[in-house]
Length: 193
Image (tube, rainbow, N blue to C red):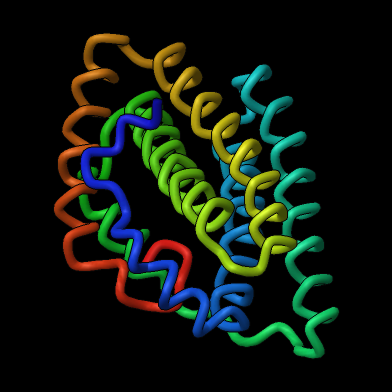
């Protein structure tokens, strides 16, 4: 369903199991950044009323997820650590050239947001199925369902606002590019790394 060209190596879960607190901090910041992305799309493209409405809902939902993860961190007797650079997102952003029309910029932002959600969904599925801590596995199962909805929403908007053939071509190229990025990731205690 997600169309990802390179699945996560299941051994990544072993890294997660040994570094749950680090993963939870990274995950919390991923949720906060997703909310920020939604707000940024509102600020940058206010004339797209349907998009604005969806991004308002998304920003609330993502901050709700942030709170859920933060509460889990506190329940485990920890505090939220510092944010770290997300190598995955940094590399993903290099795919699209700077500039272009406002519509092109919007479509590009929707596509990379959709791909980030798709990869998160895939990773959460893996965690929901493989974590020994079943409560944490169930937690990730619930979040996986949300991420799948976000991925399809972003892709739907990209296809609505851009030329559908061009969007589909860019999406497929982006999936190929992302697979190359993923070959070098999956060895760190982060959601995308």
